[in-house]
Length: 184
Image (cartoon, rainbow, N blue to C red):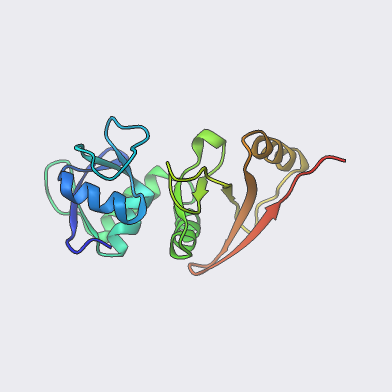
């Protein structure tokens, strides 16, 4: 991980790390964020600020690798940042539990909105491999319909990914259910 703490500034539901060197270090160490204006960076030598989504920004703050300021430059506490996250994400606590579990298992986790899920999960990183998994976070109390399960499975198959349902239990434990689809 980077040796010095990066500083990011909160703008609505994104965090911008303006220091290019700090941006490169965060991106290099875990493919955190996306360099501004560079959809698919080929290496770590970009000259652009880094845009982090709130989930990964919050994770980096918990790891003491990032400090977040508000739009006026005042420091945000972890509790204040969590409040921002909870107002921006439905079921933030459950999603963060899954995000943290996947990150700590060595995966690169990005938002999965373009795949109709919560997360896209890479084994190595964007630009190195394609995300082999899409993950949907579901609470233990949720009712999953057959229609939504088939819809998710068909989408995953169409984009050549495995569909995984993540069921967080508390703040530390997550059960993962992987669905494989095959033709008869």
